[in-house]
Image (cartoon, rainbow, N blue to C red):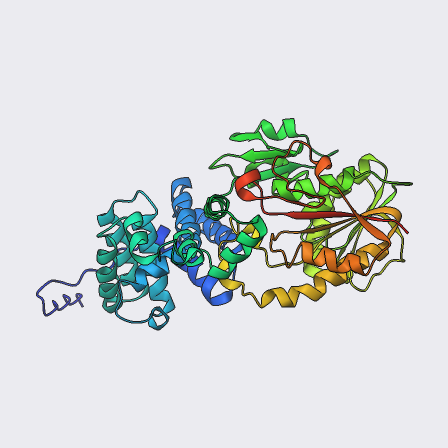
Length: 472
């Protein structure tokens, strides 16, 4: 029996199947996973891209566009929400989340890329027809046509309050950060409009991929032989991959002799390893070792001195990642699953101790842009007891004359200086030492003795480091 012709619609136009665009469908699926499952884009996107490449649907250019659509939309979500809210006749919370994701993808193409306006609207409407249906596609079309009437600067003039009237809300809308995060970062920087604007802008830039050559297993010269590789700015083991560089294509990374590690993370490990020590230097501890980047670098540095590294991680699956990162380390080490606040070791057992404590992650918003929308001020109260407990345990684990490094990937004062100050009040047998001379090439490290790295000043994640010597 032959197929019956489709009945024309009332308008007289024949029905047309929506055109499936694999790139935008994948980007939409990634955003839905981030929203529905609280997933992180850096974990969701790679397997989606790999599956698309294996199916023959994607080439390198498609993968680059999908990545830009996902990360660009997440970074600018706050700004785009304000613009969309100005174009709809209902509160934004009443717009279905899948519809809002399609709209946000469309707004990013209109205002954040070089895609022509007509193509951005057309592609977004087609995506809506595929994933939402014809009815809601009409809504998407109407909203995006309103957005297309102006550029980003014009929209910001309309939806952002004037700086003179409300500086924090102005910066929150213009730079797409929650207001409380703007306020916290501003406090950490110490005031001034130029600095906070530069920091917030840096948070919205695409970070370079940075590799670490693990000593004794790989060299920086070897990594620099890779395509698109240039030296790191500060760490002698760092190599940056320019846009388009793929870590998985690097043989040393595949073999575990090198790894992906932000330069700020490398510098924390190097500062601890290079801190002046009184007495022996035989036993090192990483008390919060997951997922293993710092542990792998510390293990390699310890091996050069004949020292032993104990890497402890509370979560079993993360301890497995640590073991994988350390596999092949040239010196002695052990990975254990243990709670750093309930030590599995005797007091005073170690010469050097690192605790890179769990935190809000506000220092890595370039890499995990969705984290800025998930975190709440009350999260600080949840982390505070753990951070203090881990630092107290670290001070008990180190011997007299040994060094403890307290590190966190957050510049929030409640997670950095407040923790160190509170714990040291209870430990008159410990003193802060100046960490800045251990990283002599870095500018703008503040008044010390602790140090704070910044994306806009150092090109790293916003890592914090305090070095503490046990004195009695």
